Image (cartoon, rainbow over all chains, first blue to last red; front, side, top):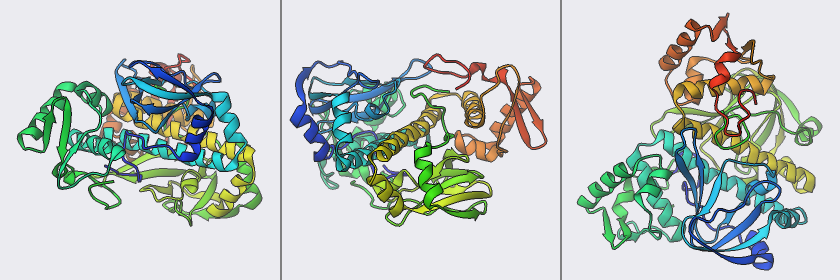
Length: 232
Length: 232
């Protein structure tokens, strides 16, 4: 689902190799429990590269409702966006699953960037692209009907891990709760369950244990301003 | 209104002097009619610095509805965000009023940045901050009740031009139509009129010709996660 940019919403793709090299060279590996909160932002912030597991970015709105606005699969970074502004944000980055990550200090990260114009340019470009992913999701939340948002989210999860199969079943590579899905696409868990059950009745969606599988037919309704149609 | 970042939503503040200098040094001045569309994005994109007037960023959603997501008052730039990714976006940047701007080519702009690490760092930081302004507005559109979104938008317009007066009348520095307001905060012109009329009955809002004035009392309901309260 893309209405404005050339990125699928909500789920980050892997970061460029040039940036990843900062972590493979200087990163301190750590195993993190589900629920671990990253100390990102501010002068003392850390930057982490997710090797295994999953991270969420979320905020708490005016009415204390939890909103997940970005998902970081393995190959993506946490803390890289606010490392440069060095300002506080009301954002929690946390491990959504047991996670393995490489950590570097924000100071180290900034220093590496500012010593290498090629790297800084890659960083700036990447920062803008990540914001486009985030904005495409936020735009969907106030312009797209819920069922289409859910189609878009499932598409984003599939295509973050592998190319979508239009004529076959596509396993969703991450086991998500209906509660997590509801938090991402601004809905409630009961409404999400209702939609998924309707899709199961139509054989567009199947369950294999806790894993969800979506048939490529589900994604034919997915919208793309660029006219590229289904997979992306 | 700030739920996540330290920026007021929707309305950009002035760009840093370091960046503005690219335009004062190399910019070609042009007078633009209301409705002029900037050729931003892609390899051939232009970058423009608004000296007088007003620009809007907008997109057309899946249902052909027009959505204004950012407002650029004098002192801000257009085309600087997608100049670095060099990719197309489904975004129109247009003059909302007769406008005077300084133009430089995207190529020139990129070259200036890539020759000066201090400038590139300022640019990257500024790009992230602008996205925060945009995101704060998008977040409001799916989490905040309409009346509070309208309070937030008026606050943003005031504080983009001058410090808000909590105990006095604050003229909105730009004459906005209810249609434009509705496009920004995801509503309809009739609903916006209804709310403004209610506020006029309560003497929270006045009209002076086509100009709107808001009393500081209106902004006491404005929310700020950082606890700084009204002006910002």
